[in-house]
Image 1 (tube, rainbow, N blue to C red):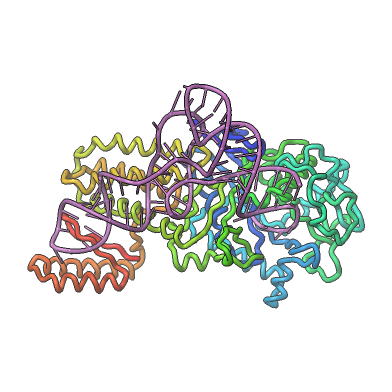
Image 2 (cartoon, chains in turn orange, yellow):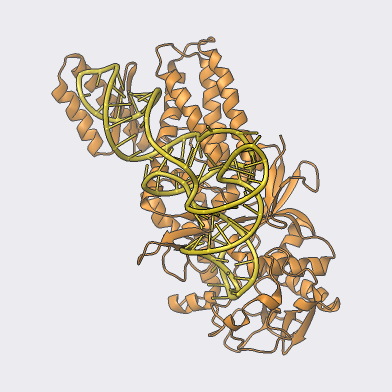
Amino acid sequence: MTLRIFNVLGRQKQNFQPLEEGRIGIYVCGPTVYDVAHLGHAKSYISFDMVVRWLRFSGYDVLYVQNITDVGHLTETETGEDKILKQARALQAKPMQIVETYTRSYFDDMDALGVQRPDISPRASGHVPEQIKMIEELIDKGFAYEVNGSVYFDVSEDEDYGKLSNRRVEEQDEGVREEVRDEKRSPADFALWKRAEPDHILRWDSPWGEGFPGWHIECSAMAKKYLGATFDIHGGGIDNIFPHNECEIAQSESANDAPFANYWMLVGSLNVPDAFDGTPVKMSKSLGNFVSVKDALSVHRPEVIRLFTFSAHYSNPVTYSEEAIHAASAGWERLNNAYRLTRRQMETAPEGDAGNGFLERVEKARADFTSAMNDDFNAPKAVATLQEFTRDVNSLLNGTVPVGLETLRAIHDVYAELGGDVLGILRPTDAAVNTDAKREAGLIELLIQIRADARKNKDFATSDRIRDELSALGVTLEDRPDGTLWKAD
RNA sequence: GGCGACGUGGCCAAGUGGUAAGGCAGGGCUCUGCAAAAGCUCCAUCACCGGUUCGAAUCCGGUCGUCGCCUCCA
């Protein structure tokens, strides 16, 4: 079955055909590292993590490039203040200190969320020569012009400018943007290189004097360097479709005389109910309505945040609420319970083919999951197939017929591979990797044995006490015909 | 004003022509010393209006509403 992708460039679902058989180059716009990441960033990068995981699971050799924007860009035209410089001043730190701090913070957060690192995480600051070279090419070809030490892209020279976002320059609301430095030939032209004012700290030498690169050129230059002039997939957040993504295309295709990305995948924003009337608005740093990844992880396990992200299709906006995250949490419990029960039964299961009639159901689960994912990475539908599968698994494992190891292994592999490797919402063990955890597990097992004796003697006061006290400590017991299961928060 | 996305049960949400997946919450039942877990079961006709069609949540037109982008933003 072929993979289909909704290509924002052209707005239609297409059969995916990589440039080179079996290999995929993908570029995703990364963060500007001037503050901690929030759940909006998490939605985006978890989504592409899922995409890359699925591509790899499908057998593709994927080269995943995601930039780190560390050259700083203006907060608003009016003040002309650089975000990184602003933060540096606020924290009384060197700009590159800020950049390094939040780059590490970003990777820490993504690691914690189970987001596999990109193969290459190029820094914009480390690729200024490449950017200058591309700007020079654009000037040579007549697509850009220099004014007072700044260089601008001449939008009128690019006949298909606007093809990604379906915009016409003349139809945009020009009044929105007050031009402070009105040296551009047209208000729609955008900066490739900006002259550095005397107080601007982040600055580099260039053929046009000291300055710093425009916001869009880094992605064009770095994508070209690591993926080539033309590559397969370009990803990012829908909120950057214009101007950022549009400008990337304009620069790259003008400079390279080649198509840029063949497929554009853009992720819907994460919204938060407005405090005033509850209408959803985009989570963003500037509105102050964000929840940092670190804060979210202090309350919810990463798997739950991932499952929450997969509650809607990646291209749709999702509203963050306690209700929604709770639903994800409860849904995760159900999946994880079945996965744990499977592992538990594998410990004592007989060899043999008891219950092998279920193998057909296992194959169906794989097929359903695959067709959901191949249909434009429909993770919510894929999760639904796992939930349906789980209902049947629970019926099987809670039935009276003992299940053989072969069947249990097959069930286990579905959870481990589809839920674990692909979606990253299930873990292969209950942890217990360090000595403290092992000791804790041993102690709990001991209490369970004592409680079992008490129950045998109908000493329910003691047995209930053990269960209640453990519950208060965050350890839940679950009595089953074949013994007691436990889990810790 | 322009561009784009969207409006499906109490909540989240899949579904792009053949009579509504899944999760959460809620009711009933089974199992259980009790509890938990699990299973079974009940709960919608898809914002509104008009049209196309044998047949539409799904296509076309219109209306209302929400969000995003057009300025830094994943």
